Image 1 (cartoon, helix red, strand yellow):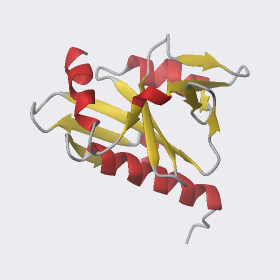
Image 2: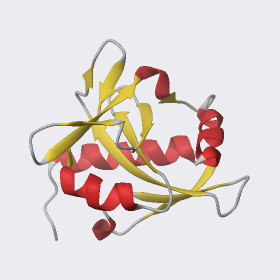
Image 3: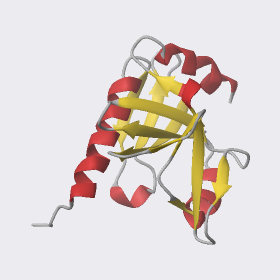
Image 4: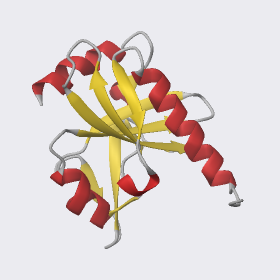
Amino acid sequence: MPKSRPTDVTGDVGEHLAAMVLAPIATVEKRAETMELDYYCELRTQPGCAFHVQAKGSEEPTYGPKSISSLPVSRKTVEEYWLAQVYPVYVLMADVRTKRVFYVRVTEETYERGDSKSYTFRIPLANELTAENVGRLVPEILAN
């Protein structure tokens, strides 16, 4: 049986929070570990209108005055896999202590280069998803 680390639990909680907030607007299908993305989703009101989600979770996320930073993501994953997807890819960053979830679409303009091997996404605090406002994500997904 594989050993579990505390960061695995935090990551799992982040994934579940992301799936829970998206469930009212989309079907959320877990991907295999080797897929480099956590979820394949389709809008409930527009079958076939799909998007991918990479969920991140942290007990101590880094907040700035106007943004929250995602955990680092490998440069290779972003450049060679996420940006090459047919459907848009969204990073959902969860603060697992407060159960707040924030989103950003993965584009060349939305990530910051970290060291030579990783990228970080600065996600605007205005992009918080809640049960009450998750529907505002629909027009953005439809536009892509």
